[in-house]
Structure formats: structure tokens, C-alpha cells
Image 1: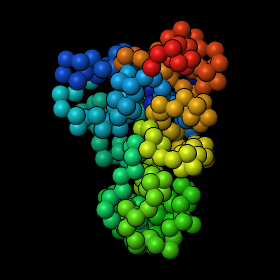
Image 2: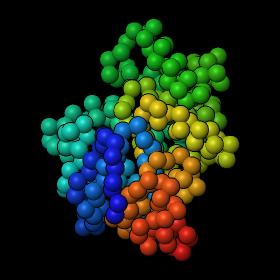
Image 3: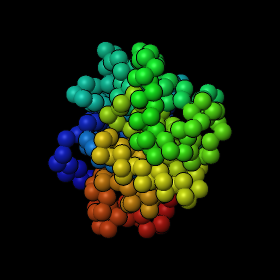
Image 4: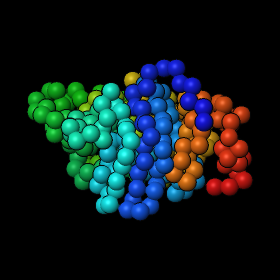
Length: 257
């Protein structure tokens, strides 16, 4: 596996293992994730992609009978340590799921939710955060006249962008995206992809995708997972043009998966 990664790693997973009960779901994962880059994770269903991304902000801890070993180093702290401040981790490492899941509240209250949880109460400050977060996801012009309207009244693509804005409102360093366009139409998918390319100027982004064309369009690095193992991690162009492992080539060429 090639991991010749020259820029600064914001995450560094070292010998990471994860079990669901007796099932060994992630096996000896060594995976640096670089700052201000888009890293795509590809692989067939059930290979550990979503499990892995949910370890990075410890969402996986909510799953019963999960056990982990090894290290997940974020900002030089192993987040598997008992000393971790989970609230602070979730502030710095935001997550967007497969389907837009706005709260049954107003558009404004959805975006303001995180900042309020972290103690921001001043109306003017919240107004600025909401406006800037919605502008970051190119949604402000579409919703600025109905901020007090229900978030669930937005289209599917708008809801997904709103959820990205909600994640950005706490000013995270990292944005995790678990198949963020799989439930969207092609036009909404294109908007999210354009957004990812823009957001990487400010954020580190990790995206799980079943769409290999999407991975090739938006990512700097691509990781191929198979049966709980990280088979290959390299520059996206190399992964798709000249992978080092024949299993990667077999998946990309459609021979399995």
C-alpha cells in the first residue's frame, strides 16, 4: 500500500482495529488524512467504509458491542483515550449523512443549533454565523427571505446543503461526508460536488462514495477498502490510472463489487 503523503496529516490512524461483537470489521488500518484535502473512500458494500468514517468523530461509539484498538490521532491526541472531550471533538469534526436530516425546526434554528449548544447566545453573532454558513454552501440567496420557515419544506438537495451548513456553523476543521449525494438527483449532486471543491480551501474533507466517477472528480487522495482492510491509499489520479494492487484494479474496472 502506497502512503507517500507529504503534506500535514490532521488525522493519523495507526493499527486501528474495530469489532462488532465477534465480527472483526476493521483490520490494522494505517491511514493518514491530510489537511485541506479531499480524501475519498471507495469499496464494495460492507467493506468497512462507513464504519471507518464514523470512527473519526466516534459516532461509532453509539453502536452496541463495539470495541476498538490502536490509535486515531487527531491534532496529536489519540481520540480513543479516556481523556477525550467528546463535545469538543464533534465541534472540530463535523458529519453529514447519506440523506439530509434537518431538525423539524426553522432553517435559521437548524444552522444556529450547534453554536447555541456551544454557548453563543447573542442574536447578532448567531445572525452572522447563519448567514456565513449558508453562503458557504451557496444556499443563502435561495433561503434568505424564509429563514423562519420550516427546514423540512426545502427540496432534497437544499436539505443536504442545509445539513452541510449546520455542520460548518461550529467552525470545524474536518467535514466527514458519508455518501452525501446517494439520495440526490444529478443536478443536486453536481451542486454538492462543486461545493466540496470550494470547501476544501477551508476544510479537510473525507467522503465515502459508491460513485467512482465522483471520487475521481472531487478528491485529492483515494483509499480503497475491501473486507475491512485498507488495500491502497494514493493520489486519486494514480489510483484510477495505475493502481498498485490488482484488487484495486479489479474493483475499479468492474470485475467485482
